[in-house]
Length: 142
Length: 137
Image (spheres, rainbow over the protein chains, first blue to last red):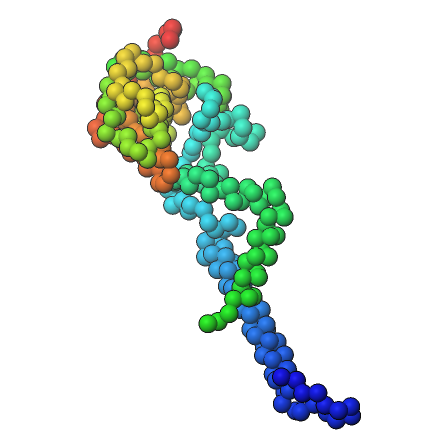
């Protein structure tokens, strides 16, 4: 309800106070949501960095091979009949444990399409990030 | 099962003469019970396992086969030659009485874990003490 005052007379203090409170509340809530968002992002980053430190690996989400002593591997591609020595380094005839990046343990077909779409269509990646950011910022603590 | 052995220069590897083994084998297998709704295919392989002076344990894949779901699951293979050269890393096949062949298989799922199963039991293929001079293979 707005009461019109005659020119020269100030509006009743209560009206102004309400707006002031609202503005202060929204700013506080906004800062709170931004901090919430930042916390989620930093926690994810911290977990990732922690894994890098823990596993001593640049990309920690891989299978870790147990140390089996000196092992020499001679590998072969699955779609040809010759071994891979032609692909090894000059003078190298065997692969060692450190040359093995990983080993297939299972299959999750088509899950990788999400990554592929985000790589091929960066706009999709940004849109997804924007939606996730908006969701976190706008959701109300009930 | 028939084995013989030559000592041959392996041109793909280091320039020393290594033992090259020749094995002929039969395989009879009923794979029907391994297949279910989540099995896309089986990757079967025959490997030779043995010890030598140079290496405490050698494992060499001699032959492999992909069996798709829907293929005849009963294998009756006779007089098979090895698909891949059975080169030893050295000269450890000569007179080696303890070479064993085992059959293993990957159960490739449509989705999920990729198990590697080794068949129980194995066949022993002792190698002769002498080299063959020539062999048509």
